[in-house]
Length: 180
Image (cartoon, rainbow, N blue to C red; front, side, top):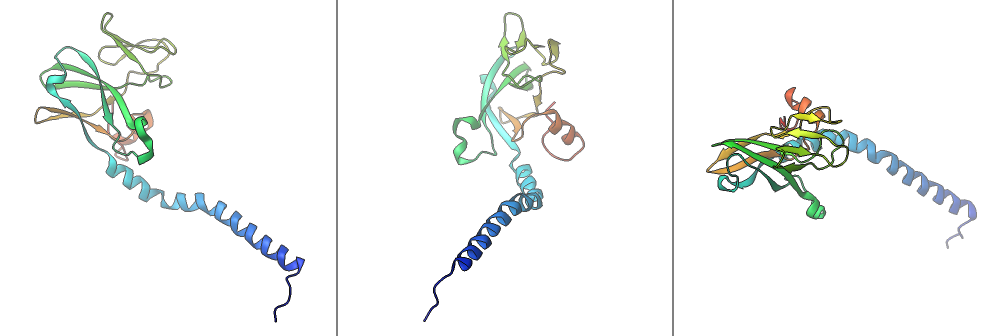
């Protein structure tokens, strides 16, 4: 024969349950922090060479927009994983590939062939054709992706945002591709 549950037993079980829930909520970020080196290694492995297309797609002396799929995407990323970039072909296999984002606040820059400038519509930032800063609030030029040419195909090193922190870290040999 079982004894009926008392209010005291009910409150005890409720207290234990709420404390267990709080412990899980507090432990989640701690466990995430402890596992972050493994996640960083996985992201480093995701950095890869991504194809932008054949060399014939980029005439010499012209700047064109290209799009690539971020190699470290998740299934729910959808169209947001398609990343635009500016490709400038100098001569032969000599290219400059720029991130589309302004170095000031990340607004997308546009190429204006009439003036031979990249212009940012948000705060009036201007960049020369080689990506260096021309005018406005941006503190530096456009960020560049590392590129290579294989089998008449243009490839860039992708998978990490070309931010100043990642550029500095990559130069110190810690993470990310050299983007500038």
